[in-house]
Length: 201
Image 1 (spheres, rainbow, N blue to C red):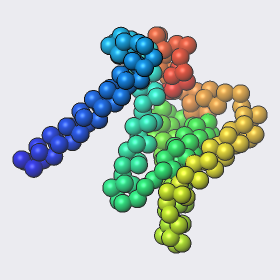
Image 2: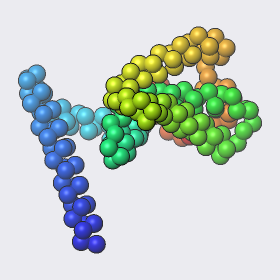
Image 3: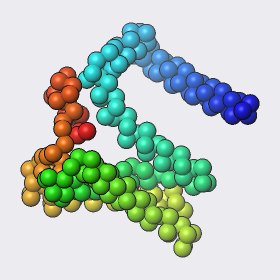
């Protein structure tokens, strides 16, 4: 118990130091522009955590960053440097959207969401397995491979999204099983008109 508590304190201290260092670096940049750090940070806080729209935007933009960061941390724990999280996220997100669009429109939300998420997780894992296989079979360094795979993934998603799927459907989020899922902005009217409006729950 004492060891776990010590580890928790150590990890908490590292996080606190990182946050303070980031705030200090940001303050220096703000001062360089002749602004007050306190005023800027107050505006930042009020624009994010004091309204439903702000909280929604934080969750909308932070969730993929947090999850991809965890994927990098997991590989790092295994002694590998996964620099391909961006590409794996792009492939996974695209597979999730395609799976949701292809599911029948009467698919229950309780089934559609897990299936679509599973498709995205599988696609991202398969994309990440390519540099893993190259590392195991040829000894190719995973940093170089995963960096290059990012550009390939983004290019492929852009191509298939624009050349294959976009001509067939005007708005993918409104066909297939996605059409049966409630919109977040029906629960939180303040989200209307924001990028998060396309996210389904």
